[in-house]
Length: 439
Image (cartoon, rainbow, N blue to C red; front, side, top):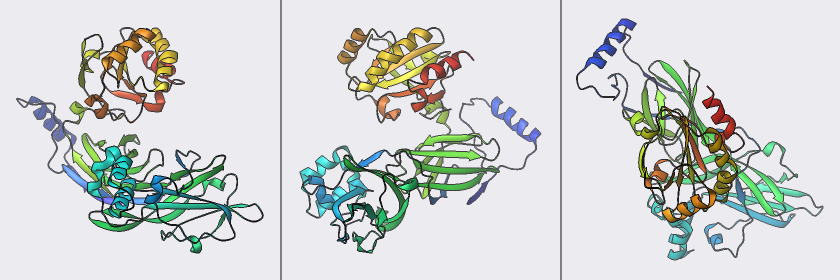
């Protein structure tokens, strides 16, 4: 537990009332929150890594190692598979893909062109890599005995040698998706360090692949302004153990029992202040930085103001969001004409939704990752009535952290995000919006 004990002075209630009156009456006062000097502007907390609860959801598919594939050069040679097993399949996942590519290039195993092709937009991340060899792999092997029974084993000690590993029976479904602890290496702060994690997988032989996930989370507790907060963080889909990407943070407190949910580089609401939270890649260190302009900047997390932007619609109208939509619920729909699911949802759900709810209290604002001519053509062909913004290469997409399409946000009449993501899928969205409009 992190006992920070950041406290305000033990003033009585009347003193706080006087403080608030003075604060509001100060000439030239802005909307910025004033932080009492006893509370920190910035602080760090340390976390502990633990095994996470296991469920049946798997989002990472790994195919057997193919020696003819160009990427096979990235992976280590695996030895020690028991002679008693036939029909061997080897599966290798990389924990730090950029490092694995960079060290293969530096080791002369792949060309410079291959390195650039493998990394593409992540090529700049090689500045954080080392040319030394880092054992950043998860290795699993499966095989069949002479009697036809299936077995698996994995490289728990990270030595690429399976001769010292236990052999497990591989049923049609591995009981309870049994997690296994493994060792691996990482490159942090200029040093190669050892670490561990837990993995689980499910096996299918039609076709021959495994469903894979990481099973870890970080956890900590800390006191702030005499309130105890409990924090956990975990991978959104179990596909990685880098806590700067696709990670969900949850904070609950001892007073309100409420839970805050946000992602890395988003806000934690502590007492009456907003802190921007950033994690180290391994999740061991969390940095909290006070931002007195958080409510003005906005965020993409629920219960925060939506990020403001100005854009021009296909029709040429300038939109100032959310200022121009005060008093309305707004469904922000980030989509693309190259996304089949987006098109189906618009055609089979959103058109009916708009016909049912559009009016003085509800609007849809479409933001398309396409040039104007494509959006115009789509609007004409599909009789779209709501405003559309062509936003190809627009900073709006980056500021709203749109990783894939469609991405939906429901914003209330005060400009606050009240729902997003899977809560607004086409099976739920009618009920969600209807319930808010009927309140």
